[in-house]
Structures are given as structure tokens and as C-alpha cells.
Length: 99
Image (cartoon, rainbow, N blue to C red):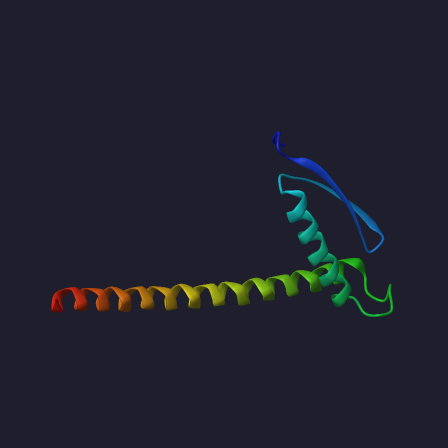
């Protein structure tokens, strides 16, 4: 554990979890909020019909799905940005040569 890490405790589906993190309070609030939201949407309305492990796996799959989608969008954004930069450079070069 580094000097910047602190112990985080939280409850999820009736179980307490603890871990050390160097993430800020704001980041941890956002992370835990997202985890709770995904776990709640992954578990059926009737509490207790799925084991906690299965609910956790469904939440992980949901997170992985979002990650893959965002990664794909980022790759598209990078490609689009690179193409725009090349076009702008060509336009600038063309304007400078025509003067």
C-alpha cells in the first residue's frame, strides 16, 4: 500500500467490501455509484433469486460491454481526427503555395 492509498468500505447486495485505493473521493463516488447501478440493473426485481456471484458476473459483463463500445468510439474519433488534421494541413499547404 502506498502513502496515498486509503481504505474504502462499501456495502453491496448485503455484503461489505473493503479495499485500498489512491482514487479521489469524487472518482470513488462515481465508481461505486456506477457499480451499484449496474448490479441493481443486473439483478432481477425479486431480490435474492440470483446468487451474488452471478449478479456480479452480469455487472462485469455490462461494464465490459460499455468499455468495448467506448474503446471502439475512441478509435473512430482518433481516426476521424487524424483524417481532419491531414486535410487541414493539405489545405494550409495549398493556400500557402498559391500565395
